[in-house]
Image (cartoon, rainbow, N blue to C red; front, side):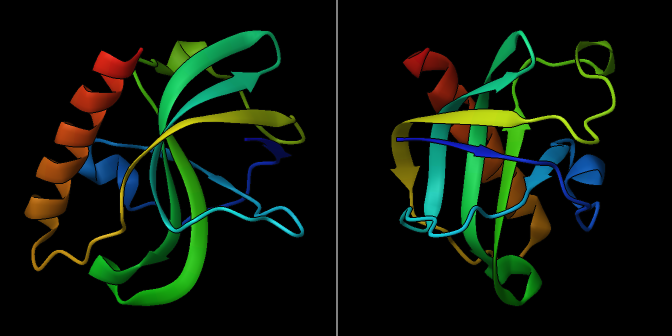
Length: 122
């Protein structure tokens, strides 16, 4: 599955956890099971591997769905201002369901595991 979207402002929680994400506008008629996915992300002519989250954010008590991607092995120099840029996402593999963690530290540990799994997929 592939889709296109644009960047929207997020809540800023990923960066302090060590996993800054690009929050994406959920496309109209978007059909994807809630979960974590290995993805390829294309921004202009650059392609990145990433971890995509789609669904509610139960660890932070949010029932509203969000769509966000963490780009793996990216530095600030790799991405310039995302305002108005089209972001293309190719879903490669479903990793797991969305989980509610009691502690943010447990969420961070799980994201670290997810990133390792994605590294082995690519």
